[in-house]
Image 1 (cartoon, one colour):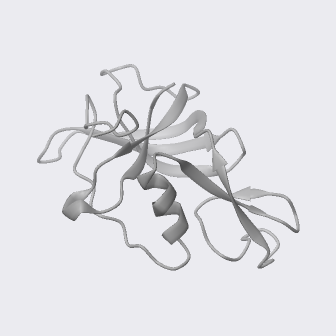
Image 2 (cartoon, helix red, strand yellow):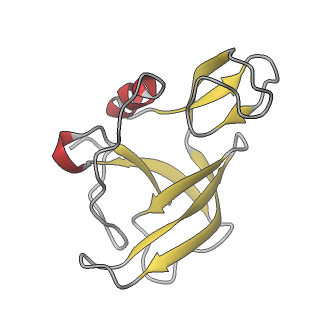
Amino acid sequence: MSEQQTQHAAFGRPIPAPPVSLETEEFWKRARDGRFAIKRCVSCQEAFWYPRAICPLCHSSETAWEDSPGTGTVYTYSIVRTFPTGPFAIGFVTLDEGPLVLTNFVDFAEGDLAIGKRVKVRFVATDNDGPPAPVFGPA
């Protein structure tokens, strides 16, 4: 497993293989290379998440992929403590480019996850040899 891919740590859960479609295929290809990608609208110049062909803000079909450093801050989170494989944390990250990303949090010790905390993307293996999924851990 590469340095970009991490095992589930203090918080974590098995992640199912994501569905790959024509709209998201490029995202998952970059994820396999350890790169986090977002889409940006050519017309209104706004970055958006999740990857799709049409800009959700101005409805233009002129969108382009761009690599993102995958850094941001925790907007909100919730810890699920009653899960068969142990506790896990999910929530939203505000990327430095602006979009909110719904994600899982990993590599946080109990009590260290907090709103406003700086985070960075990591990739974890998914079930059934699916593409690696982006998750966020301490920056």
